[in-house]
Image 1 (cartoon, one colour):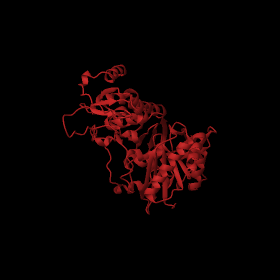
Image 2 (cartoon, helix red, strand yellow):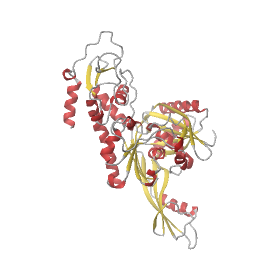
Image 3 (cartoon, one colour):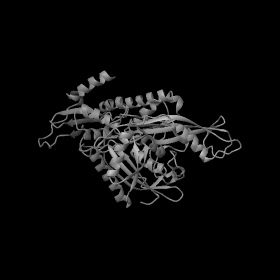
Image 4 (cartoon, one colour):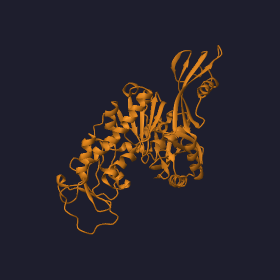
Length: 476
């Protein structure tokens, strides 16, 4: 593998993604390979089945190798879940009089900040300087070359539990690869999605994955706080699967295709008619479907608020904006609900500052894997300058805080397995023949050859609709 090739391996709960980047002269980054496969053997950022996880990693890497024509030997691996811990420590170094501060002095201050008592079961992943203080003068980004007798630094230390890290490392090694480094999921997502203006303020990056939601608070371009919530998009899917009595795979398709985090964004005229494996038929409107989704998404945002409020203070006072990214962030209305919940300008974050196969990895679900490629350029936890200088190479559009509710850029609907009637921009597709009727979703193992019964009016359909309305009454 060439020295200018950087590979990011995002091992998630629902999907494993490999992205291969090539660093061009001048620092620009071309994405030359991508491979995504369903995740196996993982749960909430931790390995639960070594053999299955190793097999999925091999498949993902091989798919990226076929696209790029490059043989992958080493990778940066994402770390997510609540086994990653973070603290902020203070370091101090004395400087001799009439001497300029040099890099050795900076390294000494950082090393003193690292010398904090940590659980012996923890392995340090990142040591990220926040800002320097020279003789009481705060807000210094680089102290090298300055004069003073007292150098101080605040350092954000990220550590991971040794056991889960060893399991991740073993899976990667069993797949025939070397671990070049572990990268915190929230850090990588921030590197890929933060815009130049957001580098000058405090921004909350929320990566909504399948099993976890990772939080990174970036202050003037530096990761200042990080945490993980053990709830993600998979939990929304599980709620739908339980209420609709359908498999998780079909519930995921229904969520992507017809779901919304805000009921007012749902198609008021759309009714889903679902036939389960035992032949039972249920009916639910898209509006009621969204009323099932909203409480769970609202719960995730509430846990994020609690985490930031307790660690840093009220969200509205410590941050200027929110960037929402990750696969689950593509749910329609997720950005709008976050904007209401955090009372801050909120946008959908997509990977940026890259060229090559940028159209393939432009979705929010690739933020972490692309971010690890960018991290590999400098490995200092900062957004590489090549991201900003290469923005003109991108052929994608960002969602702005002023975008009206319900815009398809806030979350593009996915595809639904055997459901009939593909919607576009969150709305059902027009039927070529006949009047508009309920969307039929069948999860039965074998097709029923009997003629379908005529659809009943929504108000007369028994079963799930009535039970769901009772549940909604209790919830709201």
